[in-house]
Image (cartoon, rainbow, N blue to C red; front, side):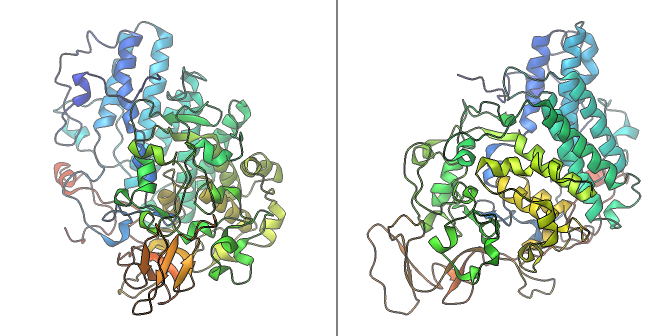
Length: 601
């Protein structure tokens, strides 16, 4: 059985207790730097704890976005309606960084130069990973590359470093990591050269597009690095992975996109780094199949994003907005039926999927990451941290935003993803000649997109990213960097209903429905106060206005979480607030993020 490298080893060094500015205590345990860090075994044991920074399975399948919603994270799902500055915590902890810097500062004790370089690469990778997360969450933060003494008040309470400085340090660490790490380890659960390059493409695409679409806003004041430099760095890092020829898009079987995400031992063909659950389990199947575990559902935003199998836009079809069942699902991009239950479907474990409104808030059930009914006791499906598909999309988006992209770049990136499922290729000239009105529209579209000659192409790359990377932890931060989080809002600042809801499929009114197009009735809808419709064996009947809410009263789209107030402040909510404790302990060195000072505590 494969070793679960994320297990926290029995070393008390992992349980450091940090106080004050969260960086000021040495580990109180029996391990001394004078006697430790001398062998590869010791360095490996110590560095295994770094992998706990990587996202866990529930960070993926419980992610709340405009594409998938659930009932598990109801109170913090979409940050727009709850504006509270935390007293402590709030994602500010620097504990993981201290562990990393502690190892890096003691590497010289190992006499083997190759071993030292290897673990310096690992340490620098995870320091870059740590700071990228802080940059996304808080913007400017203090940068530390050494372990601090408890009496080093100047460093413990230093002010924030600029975004320029932070992204430069991230790139410096990743340049070194890519140079020192091997091309491959014994498994794709351990960081290698290409994981470092993949992170570099991700971080620079984020920061480059953030600067482009937030240009001139208060949180970017004083920056000197142009977004173009960062986007080129993202493209170069992605290209290095692509030109290595070490990875490819998984395309085996009849359902290759679905199959990729229901493996408990990926072959490394597409996964660059994954989190293994060979020993542990997670609840991805329960999330999709059990009402009390989340009742996950895709939204109409996602469903309408899929093209037709001939490459044309479903949203160009007459009356597309009132189509349901087979009229909505037939002849669509195969990734739709391999992500959402849209027709008769057999899970990886051989069990048959069936529609049950009780386990999907929206009426669009999820099949991605779901092995089947047998996985309700716990899933062993591995979760991708970096996969080749993301690298290809990073490459295409960076070049498109730069304005330097060519058709050959599209063929070597986006079109490889379309080849996986037999979809027609994206043509750059055609996309730019006719930007999708749906993706530009007021309700589902992007209000901030480059209006230059590549507008149509950028929109299509965003579409591809939407459907290819759904439920992999990207969507919220994608909307942040594109300056699009007001897409979540269903009210304006004055409390008036406005825009987005978590819509499900269209329901024409009271009646019986075959929602998964398998030939069996599986959804009975009654009109409140009307004559009850004869029930269907094994199917729970629902009543409009009582069990489900429809967008137009007696008909329309199913609305999930309709009582949830969502309002974002464009001048505040792209960054999280610093906790009050840290502001106090810093003795004024740290300042609050813009417009959070007057928020109710």
